[in-house]
Length: 95
Image (tube, rainbow, N blue to C red):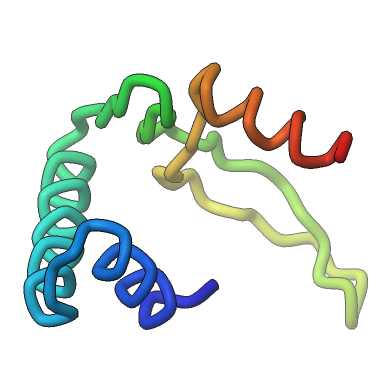
């Protein structure tokens, strides 16, 4: 499912226009990005938690040349699914 399909599905389910749904989804994404950029976690109970963690720098290899190189440390986004989401996915696989 892509963003357009998601907007259509939510608009239908919530009985709102696609324009309203698009504005709400874009607003939600902007708020989540802003909070995570400032280092905060975003927890949606039942759905999951978005968090930012530090990945340490490490040594790696260029697969083309085999040459050793240093991979710098960086911040990465992590998502931990909530219980409700995890159970819904597990139940869907069993069917």
